[in-house]
Each structure stands twice: as C-alpha cells, then as structure tokens.
Image 1 (cartoon, rainbow, N blue to C red):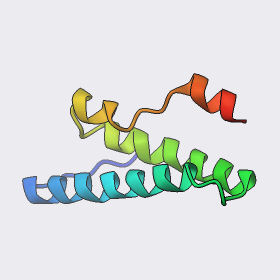
Image 2: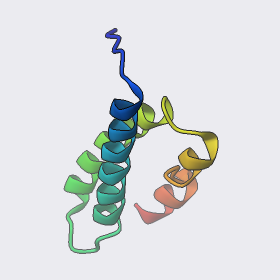
Image 3: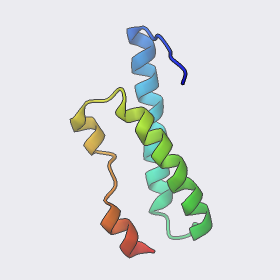
Image 4: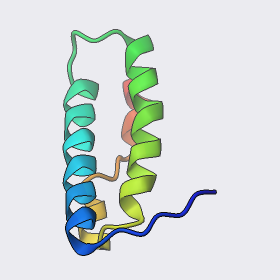
Length: 76
C-alpha cells in the first residue's frame, strides 16, 4: 500500500487524467472493430482506473463512469 500527499492543483490534474483515460477506454470498449480479447484487457484496466478515480471523485461523478454488469454479460 502506497500513500501520496497531493496539493489541490495536483488532485485536479489527477482527476482530469483519470477521467480522460476512462473516457478513452469506454470509447474503445464500444468500438465494434476491436477484438474481444483486447476488450477483455481494456475491461481489466478499466476496473483498476475506475477504482482509483472513485477514491477522489464525488458519487455523482463516479456514476458517469459506472458500467452496468448485466449489459456487459449480454454483450459477451
């Protein structure tokens, strides 16, 4: 377990970077041209990045990036 101390500006930057990464991964997960094996790797990474984002974001912001597990199961 690592701990970091960030000032306000660094927290805003981390928030921005994580949101952009989540947006990009959501875009890739919805792309029909990407192979299922690659999507599985993206999904695994998405879960890690989402948990990081959930530590610094408000519940309202988190809900924008929460994925529906039932929808994912139907897609497979």
